[in-house]
Image 1 (tube, rainbow, N blue to C red):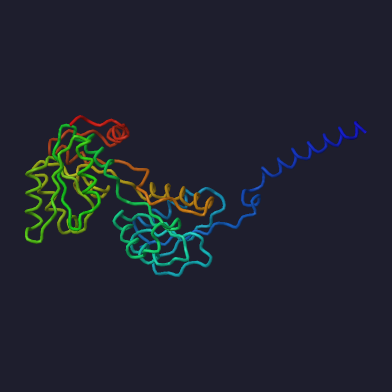
Image 2 (image 1 turned 120 degrees about the vertical axis):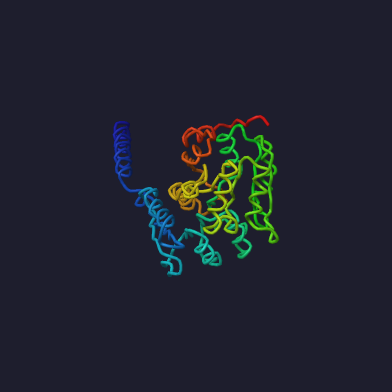
Length: 317
């Protein structure tokens, strides 16, 4: 009897090992028996950065239980979509009122997320509605400026009413990085050219914040010329801005946003909830060395600046 019990026990162990080996060879979806997660990307436009994001997201998703469909703004959603990724403000505005779906907005500014919550109050405090901002946190921008221009102390910013949240944050944080802040709200009674000239009198670095009222195709050339004449470096907010003539910028590419979005999709698949609205986690730096040479300003390369930014040190005021 003891021998029989021993043989049965050994047989059960061998069966368990064999079964474990078979299960390890099975795909995750087969093991869990789970339905695939249906994710629909809705692009504001099928061009440029939006299309680049969609392609990068498809590549960044792990091979597994996610089915990704890409449509353009205004097109019908596929049936039974579990999660919608709204790319850009146009798509986000169209989908914000659709309370039947979980929505993650990407490549929108922080101010755009606030507007969505104002326009669609039912979405506030929802675990099924969130955003990954396109703009950078204030500390990251200040860190770039401190690394790029260690001898400059007077930071100028122009903004249009209503004052963006960044202005209050800059007032709180600028001194921590050794800066004196000159923040000026543009007025309808004064031309933008005059506003820029006044700001340059008080500043040795000009930080641009995303504002179509101030920085657009009609105004950018005159702003750049004014900064060159004053020998004040302009810090941009995108790679294209640096190519146009800003001296440097910290920004997140569509591929960076796609990587962060992939992680949010995985969280949604695991928990059924989205992470809180957040700034981009991944970023890079661009430097226009030609502009720096023209203004006789010494500035380190993009990689060196990014390494300095990753350091937790603050410079002395």
